[in-house]
Image (cartoon, rainbow, N blue to C red; front, side):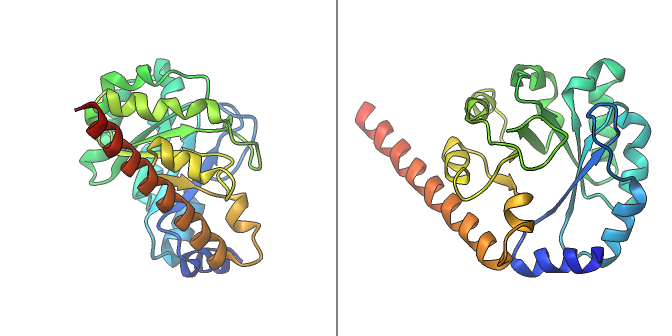
Length: 219
């Protein structure tokens, strides 16, 4: 049951529940609508991070917020369909967090006009639409680019996050990791989440130490 799956990953140690909403148009797959978010909200104790892989987030933002989404992310690739800045401000005006996502082949420079209205940037490390794809290391420089642009919010990587890839993602500077198959497909979910957390923390610490050493050597 859905409730059992929610409780399973919450008890296993997840920080957020990441929900992928697909419309069969922006991406070829089709998932669910606000009523599923509402059902999850009723049994969840963790924040709900809703990722809208849809063509018209302007139409559906409020229904998903009403259903209980704590953070709502939509794709910069649909910016021609409406006012991105206005929607981000609207989400935040409702006391929720706002995010924008980029596909692997979309430059993060397109996010620059909206950085001050963002709580999170979601970088897709696979092409949106299907789970179980291979992690694309080519997206990792986007993390440094965002920081160089002055973005201080959360940077999330989504797609192919697993024990063999999370260290690279963490070392690049990401601090939120969306793991679907790696967690839900694990025999021992608490052990898998603990493993992922440990690998990320170790990589982040090593990157921090290396950065300090580089700074010291150059001063």
